[in-house]
Image (cartoon, rainbow, N blue to C red; front, side, top):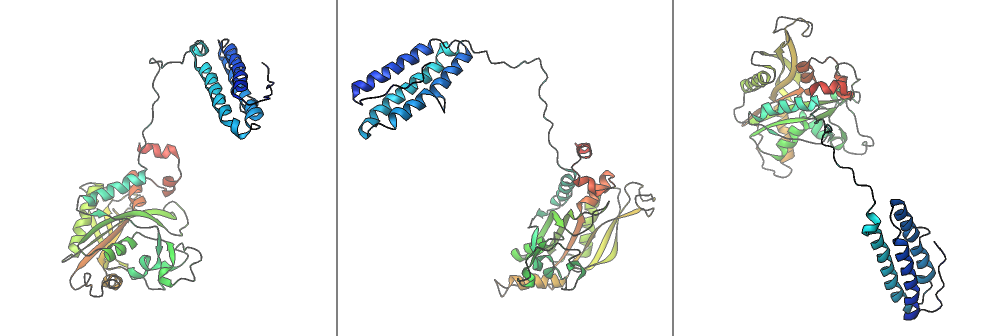
Length: 371
């Protein structure tokens, strides 16, 4: 194949027709020999190659040096030649001897795609949330990066409360120039969503709040710097501690079986008064006492209590910034209860898992057990 491009001495119509007719004859002559895939590929490279293809050389030799008035007729003939080359590549003679495409062998076993499954933590979280959905609760969510106001101040944590210690709370850097209440941190519980909901919405409220939280805890068999919580809030008129006990007793039976018992012990949380810790009868020994319940017959599971009036006062102050007469959360008119539980702890109890780190290891041998 001759790679020499003949020189164009003139650019009149007759000269252009003669030059492109010669090239067209070359294309037809070479196209008649396209009887193998190798010949077809060589033909394509010879004429359409990006670096040394004939069309590229013709473009550089003729089009770039042509006077302005000759570029249009040159371009028309150039495109016609390119179409002739592409048609030759697609002609039956060029494709007749291509190897037939391999079909599907229906006798072979199919490709099996293993279906995905929810992570055991997500599965447990959805089970908990589902229990409260059946009680008429709705789900609310909030940001993981929170302000000090929503995470602490509005929840009745004094400035010197131990939970504000940087050993417990992961602070966002470069916040010292902001007012204290606006400084950002990684939320240590999902309780800020309770405040956000009350600020935005008047009672009655019945919400459940699943989500991820962060604390500066050293990782061990029962602690992780990242873990998950499900909290709940119920605010309305005439809400009592009996309503709280009945709600949680029903939830524990729905999660662990109708035979499980619950009991409440006095406790302390800044945002509830009175506060309580909730224990369930050991699901492994039926309350008789075993190693998993430390031979007590009971397993501590969550905290709860009646919403402290100081929390309602913080919410009212925030709502009155937009409505000075707002009195929706007057503690003399409404009451409420709140509760919170760790998802990892419940999942560990349900499945007999001894190390919280398994949930975050990414070990498929562990995760496939839940398929």
